[in-house]
Length: 81
Length: 207
Image (tube, rainbow over the protein chains, first blue to last red):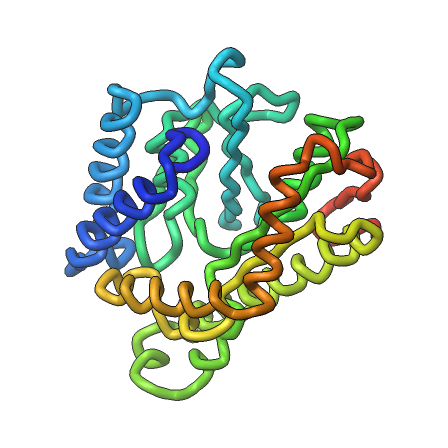
């Protein structure tokens, strides 16, 4: 939110508050995970659309976009078959 | 689980392999913590992404390595690391309702997550030993360890604990040094990033 979407801190907190309430107040009754991933996806996409105008904006930015470089880290688990 | 490889989603071109994806996919993949959300498959190879919350919870060393690759000769300004306040997991060890709900392996994972963050912090401290006022770690020490990610109704408590932490004398001092470090980062560089040492692999660390 701060890096790629360049929100200011107040705006990011506002979005985070909104996101956690919407996502975590809706518990799943069955299936993988306790909360609805589709709900999370929908809210993230609407935040992206709010800022960039396109919910499918790519993560990669053009060189001209500025000097802010952002990375998010994820640890990938490969399951042994 | 047979392998755990950290994947970095970048907003910029890099010589490293990268995953082409949208902003929402990256956000969704990095929030796919187990027991919270189901996995997501993205990229050309349709890699499954799960477990956003386990491992590399303190990415300081990854960031240092990345900075070294990007700006080899540039002088370092400062490194600011902000924790999530999950430094102590002791409360989870207490028997109670929580333990009946959360499987033991998740409790173990949470515990190792906190240790992982602290270890990384110690490691980074070591690297910046000769560079005072360059590395700053902020982490709310008390109050947040009982609050789970999904407890959105407790966000006001998070705010209160954070405000209390920020008002502590030593934290106030740290913050003013930190503000000065950011403000003067163009002029104060004394060491090129490359000189800070690099992580060879997750198991082998050069000090």
